[in-house]
Structures are given as C-alpha cells and as structure tokens.
Image 1 (cartoon, rainbow, N blue to C red):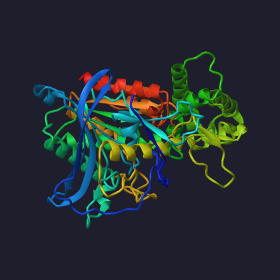
Image 2 (cartoon, rainbow, N blue to C red):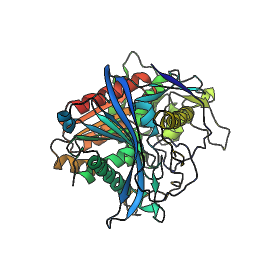
Image 3 (spheres, rainbow, N blue to C red):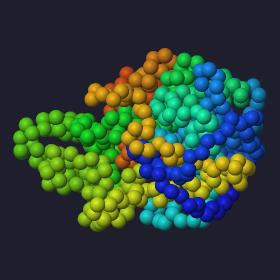
Image 4 (cartoon, rainbow, N blue to C red):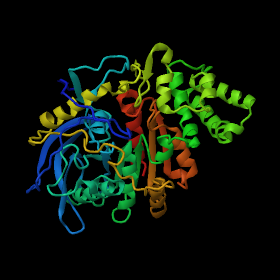
Length: 500
C-alpha cells in the first residue's frame, strides 16, 4: 500500500447555523471570471479496489452552468474517476455515482478522501488517540470504482467552484436553486463524457441528502436517476433536528441516545445486542413514551415516575432529570449530561469521542472534529500532488458566506405553519419511476442525523418497501472514519449499485 505523509495546514473553523454537516475550512470569498476554454487536469493511474486490479483516469474538470437565458452563472469543478479498462460495448451500461457532502455549503472532501475516492486519509481507529500530523494518504481499497465511475461535485463557492463575476450568489443558496445547479451539472457532465445512457446514482451526505432528493426530482423530468443513496439523512429535517416542542422529535431520537449510553457503559445492556437495544428503545419511544409526552401535565405522577425510570434505564440520564424537565432531553443537552460526573462531553458528530466540558458560559468544541485537519491536509495534497491541479485559486472546504439563520433558503414560506416536506420529493420520484431505488445509511453514534428519524420516515411514507434499503453503521456522522464501517458501507453501496 502506498502512503504519503501529510502535514497539517492552518485552518479556521466556520460555525454553520444548522450543523448538519461538519464545518470545514473557511477562506475569504472571491469571484472568478468566466473561463475560456474550460480548465481540466487529467492524470492516469492504476489501483486495486475490492480485489480488482484496474486502470483509471482522474479528471479535475470544470463545467459552466447557465441560467434560463443561456447566460453563464457559475464555474463548477468536480473530480471524476473513470475506469479505463472497460470494453467499449460495456461503457453505456457502466454506472456513474455522483457524490457530494452537505453543510449546506460544504465541499465534497469528506466523501472524497474519507470513503469513496481511490485515496483516503488514514485515521487512528482508537477514538482516544491524538490526530496529529504528519497524516497518511493511503490507497483506498474500499472505493466502488470496480463497479462504477465516481464523480465528486463541489457546489458553488466550495472547492474550486465559483459563482461568476456579476452573478448574485443568492440564487444558489436555496434548496431549490442549489438542486437545480447540481442537476444541471450532472446533465452537462453526462453529455460531455458521452454517458447519457449510463445508469446514474447520486450519493448525498447530511444536508446533501436533502439536495439528493431534490436533484432526483429535478432529473426525473429529463434524465431519471437509477437510485439515490442518503448517508446521514436529514430529509425529514423537522424530526431530525429535534425542533423544540415537537414531541415526535424527542421520541424518534431516543434510540440514538440508547446506543451512545450503551457505548459509554452508562446503561445495563443485560446481554442484549445493539440491534435489540435499538428496537427496544424505538418501540418504547413510539408507544408509551410518545403517549406520555402527549399527555403532558395530565399524566399521573405514578405513571410519570414509571416513564422517567424507563428513560433512565435507556439513556443513562437520571430519572430526576426527566422529572424536572418534562420527561424530555434534547440531543445537545444529552451530550453534556451523559458523562457530566466525569467532567466530559461527548461528540456531536460522533459521540464515541469525548473532551473536557466547557467552562460555564462557554461552548465546548466538538471533540469528534479533531479529525478535520487530516481531511483538509489530505484533500489539498491529493489534488495538487497526485492529480496535478495547478489552479491559482485556493480549495475551499466551505462557503464561509453561508452563516446565520437566513443564509440558506430551505423553501418553506415564513409562516407559523411552515413545514419542509422533502420526503415528498422521494415519493414523487418513486411514483414516476418504477425502477428507482433508495438506500439510507446512518452512523449509530451520530447525534445530528440519527437513525430513529429514518425508521419514522420510511414507515410513514408510501415508499415501496422492496425498493428501499436501510442500514446502520458503527460510527458517527462520518461513520467511514471507522475502517470497519467504511468497508461495510462501501460493500453495501457496491451491492446496491450492482443489484439493479
């Protein structure tokens, strides 16, 4: 296995208003002029992936987006890996997997050098270990390049992608506008690479799962996708983010708290498997617990105490806390309460990680984000030294301008009756395309996009069960930082793509 030692680069962490995806490198915003001709950097490589030796090309290439009048609006870059030792007659049937992260406003570096690219950053598997330079960039034998070509898309103002001079970036900073831009990119990439007929899949992570569902709906009008892969899904965002006062949000997120409490030894598992604990917690959450929350102050004291005791047994948080707080705890509060007696908090994106609690009045950083410098160093090194990118611009891990409560338009009108019915987009595509399939994966130690809302969304939807695959992994929001979870995830995605 080839390795490269990487040294850390200085980073500034941008805090996003809704942290669905890890905040990354924040750099000053610049604007690019319309390029002519298109910029591209192509290199040839060999590798062994899933036990298959193959040749592939890597292309860091530019595509210009246009508005309805044909006016150029943005320069989008993507890194494409295309297998070269494929017989010409087989190319039209070879799948293409388009991938992006979330944020909103995050580049695709996490999936690129963390999970699905031919190179990945090697991280300590002991969550207590320091993550310090030099970092290792190694061959990624788990990538699905053996069965599909992979394309990592950086949305406008991330990576090397830029909104063109004189164009208002606001049009790209909405759920609908962002999805239209990515859909247009996929169409243009397919045309310019003669892959119109290839089966196409989209994989989105975190906010990227909302983007993926809307992209699928957009493309259903012109070039339908074969399937969508949601990782760390936020499609039913109201339940996922646990909106204050929404009792369903407290219920569906309870199984994640159970998994985390079991990991840290705060509850008695009594020989039960993780899956058995999850099922038990979810069943209680959606029956007795949800009923108790709905009854509110009409719940009898004896019953209130019974529910509090059951919650304590499932989460490791004392019954007295629940009795004092309306039988509910937020995911954020859980992070600081679980190991409070040890003076520790657990990670937001991956609750296996811990760190000393913050001083009163201060906000603690997320201990699971100590892996971030390794990703920044890895993607920077890979693009410049392996893929020979010589652009003068800097690679942006995040669009730093997307901050504050009104920086991103999710599409619902400003009304007390607002809702975000993104699952409807999946329903529309399922109805329009009988062969369309859906895959949803979640890390069990993630406190941002938990697995309970997945089960709730799927059971409450009209998605045909035979066309939906649901999986959980031993990890957090970026579960692929665990090598065992990475293998399981890529094996599942490979099977999902290959079983069409």
